[in-house]
Image (spheres, rainbow, N blue to C red):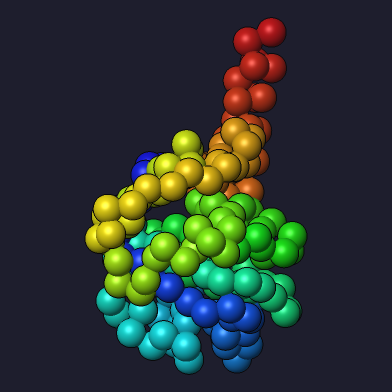
Length: 174
């Protein structure tokens, strides 16, 4: 998985709950291709049809708060979106990593350098962020390597299957 994203900034306000990311009425749908049609449908209805792989969701405070489920993050992964957010609460942080979403946490000041529609480039491995539209660059603290490995494997299940396969190969070599 490539950890350098370049695309459009989809800037969101503060306090976007997990139920606003994908309505609770879709909680029993599990197909990422179906879920992607519902991502932010009530807040940014154009996102499902206009977002492209490499685009970035730039979210304010308390992103994905409330009831915790993986559906929004599965939809984001299916769409190829990255995430920049103001200090996520631990449950959405864990769900994003488990679902394979590359993310960086930013200060409010850093988030203020992005407007909706700006063109961006983000290297999730190094934490280098560029607002191409404004010709501005900042650095964020990247995820630790072990979390990046989970993201690169497509999430927790992908990581476990990769790690399990590697351990089987090692045990057969002995």
